[in-house]
Image (cartoon, rainbow, N blue to C red; front, top):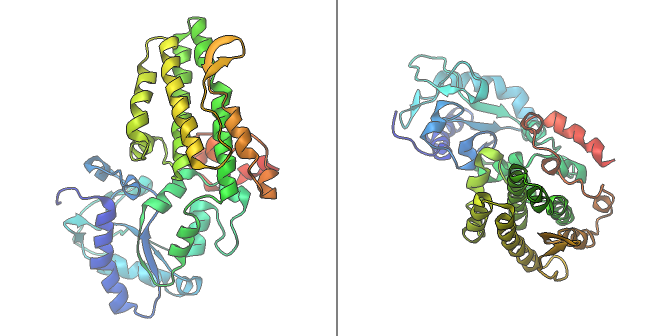
Length: 361
C-alpha cells in the first residue's frame, strides 16, 4: 500500500476513479448522491496512519430515490462487488471479515469483493443516523435528541456528488441549531457551570484535593463545551474533543489557562486560574450580543471564600431572550441529550436517543 493519505481524500478518489465511471457508463439513467458523512475518525478529519487498522479505507454512501433504490439497489451492489477495481491509489477496495467496527481493508485479486459502498436513500439514511424524517420539519425535541457527534460528522464530511441536491440541502438545514434552541443550550451550559462553581474551593477546604481536581476538570470540560456552542460548532465525541477544541478561534488564548487549572497544586491556585477562565467566557458571552451586557465579575459564593462567576446570571439572561413557545415550554436546566448524559452506548443508539424525548414532556 501507498503511504497514508487522509481517508476523506481517499474516498473522494475512490468515487472519482471507480464509482463515478461505473455510474456514468453502466447506470446513466440513475440520479444519485455520493458522500462520506457518517462514522469514522476520517470523516472528522482526525485520522492518522494508526486509523488504518479498522474502519478506514475507500468507502462512501450512495443515495438513491426510494423508487430507484427499490429497482436497482441489489443490482448496484452486485455490480460493485464484481467490477470495482481491486485498489485505489494502491489501497484495497475489499474489506475483510469481521465487518464489525467498520471492517479492515484487505487486498483481494478475485471477484467478488466486499466493498464498503452503502447503498441507501436519503430518507433511510437520515432516519437511521439522525432519527430525522427529511420530509417533515425537524421538531424541537428531535433537535435536542440528536447526538452532537452525529451532527459533527454530517458537517465535517464531504459530499462528492449530488444530482438531486437533497443531501446538500438537508445538510445545510442541519448546519446549526435554530436560534432559540441555541439560546436554550447556551443557557443550560452556563447552568451546568453554576451547579459546580463553588465546589472546587469547598472540597479543597476540607483537604479533598482529588475531589477539587476532579471538579475543576469537569468545569474545564463544561467551559470547552460552552466554547463550541459559542462558536456554533458541533463537538465530536471524547476521543477527538480536545483536538477539535484546538481548532477553535479562542483556543490559543484559553488553552494555557486550562493547562494552569489542571496543573495547579492546591485549590487556591486552581481557583485563581478558574477565575481567569470565567472572565474570559463572560467577555465572550457579551461579544455574542445575545443578551444585555452582563458584568464580567468574580466574587465570593455567599460569605464563603470561594470565588465564582455566578453563572446563573448568564443562564437567566439567555432564557429571557427565548421567544419560541415550544422552546419556552421545555424543562429548564435540562438541555440536549449531550448535556444530559455522556454514556457512549446510549449516544450511539439513535433509537434509544429518540426515547429521551419523553424527558421533555
